[in-house]
Image (cartoon, rainbow, N blue to C red):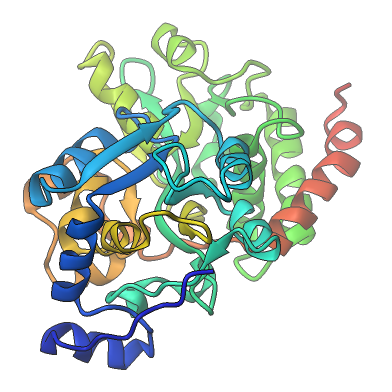
Length: 366
């Protein structure tokens, strides 16, 4: 594993690092070392996902001396982990320097010794629940569960889970799929449970969510059809849950035909986070660190918002007035995200077990 340097020649970065206790390079020295390496290898970064195309282009423009090698843009988190394993002794462009993976893959990669610690200058603005305390992995952007609403069918948009129980939403509400097989649907049930009691977590939250959905089904408000852009457009599922970035992109694509509202429920805001990490075998470790500093800078974090993914530093940046007004105008209100809850891995695991045990028998499905 590469030893982290502690060069301290940038006064501003030194102050930030002193506050975090991070062992990281001063930015100017890090830039020089990364330029000397001249390459950065990334993996599984499709350009249309969360605005990654613009993020990569901005990094290239800022550091034209560094060639960015892009491996397998459509790979999944598991593929990224396997790529590290397969290239432990490879110093060429087929060995990923950095990874971007689902939350559960961060701790697993740490346990296998596949990633190395690094704390960026803005470390303190990353919520503790979304990062490894030792710096092995750290959340970078997230989505929250939201409602997409066909305004041609639903004239007054619901603003909460509580609203959805009202008679005017008969035959209207849907999830993306079966919560036993789809994470976004499972977390929708979890969020429903949390809306009934904000102190719940894990299996308790999930079971309360099942009770909510069971009552919604009994009232006729829950549609036994998967929510989708097509079904929303046709009015089959005029209200359905999904991650906000998917719904916002759908809204733009439909371009008013039909008009779509995207609403974050006021009584339950559940976030799903993706995490970054540096390979323990990174051939271009300084370029990897510089990439992380860029992603977690104000510039990098703002680019996620342009792709409708919320940067992990969103609350801190919003409070500091660092987010451009024109970007905020295209998003649900910032105050909705201030209440975001990031379920831990243990809580998600308990919820998954409760879903498998109780969803079918309580909902009367196979």
